[in-house]
Length: 166
Image (cartoon, rainbow, N blue to C red; front, side, top):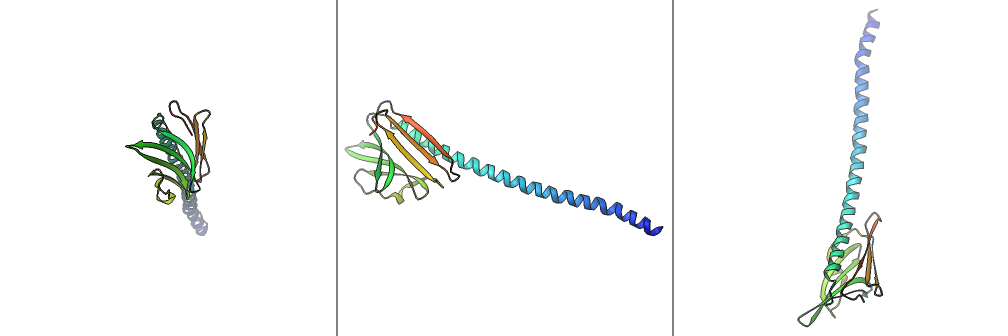
């Protein structure tokens, strides 16, 4: 009888410990899965925020250049499609170029006629999979789209009221 009593007492101790162990392991798995999901959500949110910020930046730049004293157009310079913001200051023409190069969205300001070297532009957004530009001079509209590393893209069309689009 003593042996059965010992087995019964051992089961009273082992069963809660095993149950607690299973609970602890499952809790750990739940935390790991949750942290992975949270990390993916945060990364997605950051990517979307970066793209939206870049789209807003370009939209505000286009609105700032919506004047008869500036020229805005889409061009292909050195094999790169660029959005050109052109202005004249004291008889010199300057071009502010926004373009996609080597997986990044970049911007550079050069004097018109100088050699454009896309690798020297300032970084606006990295991990970009595409940047598309389209100008519609008949409607005075410029459209562009930026695609992030996840392939999702933000598109915007801006209509000019005062300046002409080439």
